[in-house]
Image (cartoon, rainbow, N blue to C red):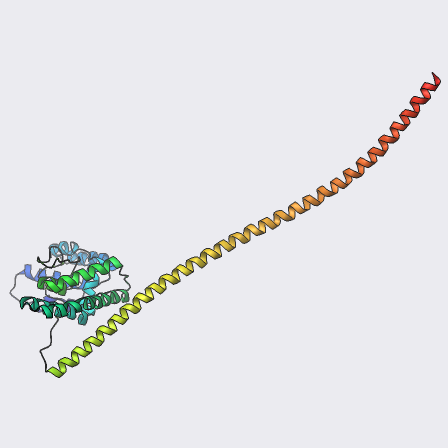
Length: 316
């Protein structure tokens, strides 16, 4: 098998009495872990390469399984990256979900109300971290994908099975929950039953003073996260205004250039018309001179004809 075998679980199973089918499944899980850490644009080519390597090594079944691994949606991939690179935010989602579950079991309505108020901030921080990680890897997360990320994390809050599926780091589609029924996980994980890519642990309870310190620190983090979210939103709005201003400027420049061309054409036309007008006025002057000359000549000829007529009559 090509690649880095040390990153695959089969390294520790090479001498195990487990069946070859289990070993193949572990190989598949290891390759899946590798593939689902890639940016979506690189997934298909890498999957094809891995399948070819498996086939070349004589494992046609593994090659077929690799080729069938689905490409993750942008939202699912971003959640996978959150699990791998934003474990603090993901842990916050799981911890709040566990606390909500406990409060629900105990019918602690005051606690449920308090935790419910925290949920939007925790989810927003996790979604923002997922988007930041994704964009840091060169992948733009749309608003629609961000909503899918939030829905997936909300599902992890309400359903431990959904949380485990997300923890695998091999999510291929987003999840959703209505808060009442188990989350539908069919086809949601690339290799069901594979070991989790990240284990999120919760610290043991400490004395009251340290708990207060952690609570204060958490509140400060939440404030900072809220401020960051607002700043990013303001920056997005500013970018939109800038883009609008740039479009308006570009349109104004284009219109100015068009008008300049039209003005030049008009000036050229005016100069041509002025030349034509001057030539016409000169032609009028010449025509008027010719008319006056022709008038004088015609008068003189008429007088000559009248004199000749009078002479003829005198001879008759």
